[in-house]
Amino acid sequence: MAARVVGRAGRLALVVRSSAVRLQSRLHGSTGLRSGSQANFFPPLEDAMLPSGSFNNRMALITGGGTGLGRAMTATLSQLGAQCIIASRKLDVLQRTAEEISSQTGNKVHAVQCDVRDPQAVSQCVDQIEALTGLPDVIINNAAGNFVCPSERLSPNAWKTITDIVLNGTAFVTLELGKRLIQNQKGASFLAITTIYAESGSGFVVPSASAKAGVEALYKSLAAEWGRYGHRFNIIQPGPIRTKGAFSRLDPTGAFEKAMIDRIPTGRLGTPAEIANLAAYVSSNYASWMSGAVIRFDGGEYVSLAGEFNELRSVTPDQWKLLEAMIRKTKGS
Ligand SMILES: CCCCC/C=C\C=C\C(=O)SCCNC(=O)CCNC(=O)[C@H](O)C(C)(C)COP(=O)(O)OP(=O)(O)OC[C@H]1O[C@@H](n2cnc3c(N)ncnc32)[C@H](O)[C@@H]1OP(=O)(O)O
Ligand SMILES: NC(=O)C1=CN([C@@H]2O[C@H](COP(=O)(O)OP(=O)(O)OC[C@H]3O[C@@H](n4cnc5c(N)ncnc54)[C@H](OP(=O)(O)O)[C@@H]3O)[C@@H](O)[C@H]2O)C=CC1
Image 1 (cartoon, helix red, strand yellow):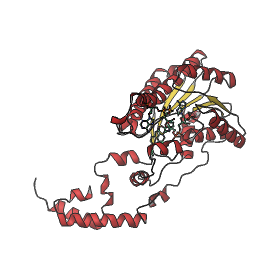
Image 2: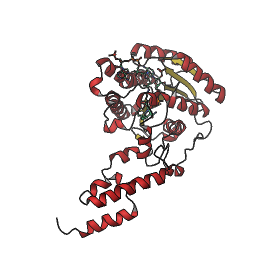
Image 3: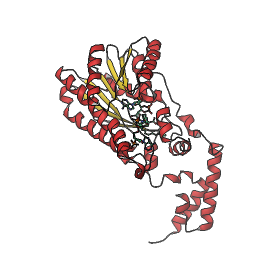
Image 4: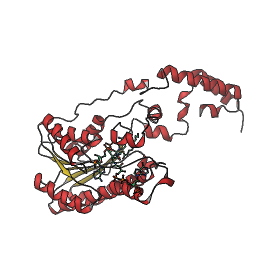
């Protein structure tokens, strides 16, 4: 953008471009950086943020809680006193996570197998949950599937697989639990984990973008409709946070990571513990007035991608003097 703005003055454009490259390498040391130097201003605080015992006597269901961000949310809720149930397809992974977390926190974590694409499996999973802990007070719809793929290469089954996990899976879990909670006159907090491109759309992850947008519509709609039953519905849109599940399918070579960090104003990726603290707050009684909220949690990536002139960040003060002089010299249109 800097070079385009001064495109009319070819010589100046060259100066701007080469100074920008020098500035980048001064800031980052090399082109192979893992985080921007400004990341020092934004260190991740990873201890549980809420007072200990905030989730005592509360039951929390976390779908996809065996790995990645779901695992981190489970660990934080369990540390804060919740009895957790984690549900997904791979029972061995769930059981390992459940044992590890409960041995650290002293609070029981239950593992329940469930493919959220199958409404019957979801209903049986909720039967199991009712038998184990009773209906949950906190529901976190976190399970997802995704991969990067040009849309012209997608088969109908590829489309169906992602939209079934993300949109239908979230709807099946939410509706099954919602109906039973309503019948039992029990309130609950529902949280859905979407993504920043649910809002903007994104090429190369079109089934995921479409399904996550649907999840946001579902949660905003139910926030309006089911408040009368004591239910809150909120959404967190994470930016990039390194997990094996996401990065192996969205950045398999690792080549994309530097570009992501470069455009994130806080100069680093998020961490699982940071989003776990936010999810715990949103799901807690400290947030009992929060419903229908869409919380973007991305280090500033979304606005950085959106702003027409944001690449002018690389223009130096000396270059600004030249640019300003050119602009001031202009008379009329
Ligand atoms: C670095 C970026 C950071 C920012 C991230 C932002 C947003 C992130 C959002 C996320 O959701 S990350 C979470 C990612 N985690 C997962 O995806 C975990 C679960 N995933 C899976 O289990 C699998 O990857 C899958 C494919 C989603 C589901 O597995 P399964 O049910 O076993 O499906 P199949 O293997 O049978 O495949 C179904 C269908 O899809 C086609 N397909 C699979 N992979 C690809 C691919 N890479 N490209 C194109 N098509 C693919 C497959 O061929 C099948 O279609 P057919 O027509 O052949 O039957
Ligand atoms: N990490 C990131 O940068 C970002 C992640 N997100 C979102 O965060 C959430 C967690 O992702 P992340 O932790 O990174 O990735 P993971 O791959 O670790 O988590 C996805 C989880 O979903 C479960 N899952 C997948 N398919 C099904 C299914 N059919 N039924 C039940 N469970 C299923 C998986 O378990 P199993 O295989 O056992 O079924 C897995 O535990 C997702 O909603 C994702 O879209 C959003 C933006 C950025």
